Length: 333
Image 1 (cartoon, one colour):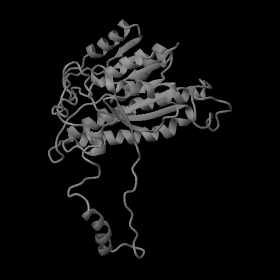
Image 2 (cartoon, helix red, strand yellow):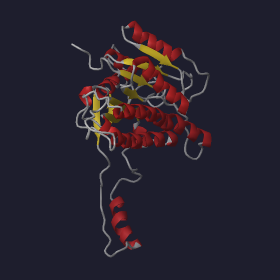
Image 3 (tube, rainbow, N blue to C red):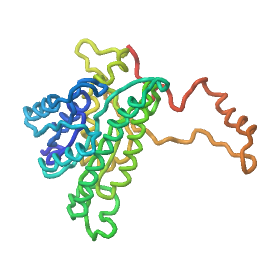
Image 4 (cartoon, rainbow, N blue to C red):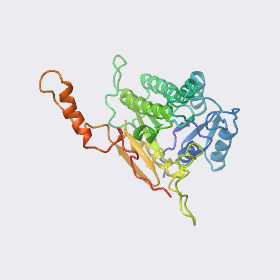
């Protein structure tokens, strides 16, 4: 019996540690050949000297288990480095099938104290980094489609041709899994840069899903909860398991969903946002209208708005923001 990802190749960014490492190992376990990307800087704020050691260690771990993997030392937020990353996958494995974007940094600060560089650096690594790799992967898949290469593995992706490009083309195979965060859904007071970047990643993903569907490519985004060096402060107050119990915040809880979304079995899952942790996966709906008010005449008066909109919020908890403080409950220890 073949493995779900046998014959497919993958890139996982930020795969030297934490979530990225767990995802790279899972894709390899499912049969994919993996390019393990990591810039290897020791600080979670992106500080320190770049090192190939983290990516090389994960690639070696995959090979020791019988899989195929090569390391890539590179900053995905650098346009040329992202191009080199995709080219490495294609030159090593003949093509790219799966892209998992996970690389990121943290530079937390309240909005009134945040510097321009703290804003720019986080937006650059998270949002531009996701764009760069997605762009070059999309170019690769579109060129394969236009050349007439079709795998026949796509399902429900729309017409199998591009205007002016001939008849009878089947879809290529492409999967993108991007990494957002509940910080964008529920707010995070000390992370305006991170929350903004993660919200942008959702918009990037849904736009990409619409643009690439006709080629046979899907794009989905996850909001994972995991205990890593990136979240050591966030989850410091959450109890760790004792007596051999599995940590519900272990990165290994997130990796299986990534493996599934990367597989042919998930062909009909496209443009979706999922929260995942501790043996739970939840599909998040797009925003829905909570209340609607109509003006008595053509234009609202101040008094009408105070009566309608103001009245609506007058009956809600004081200080309630756009989203609940926690989208899905998680008990503190």
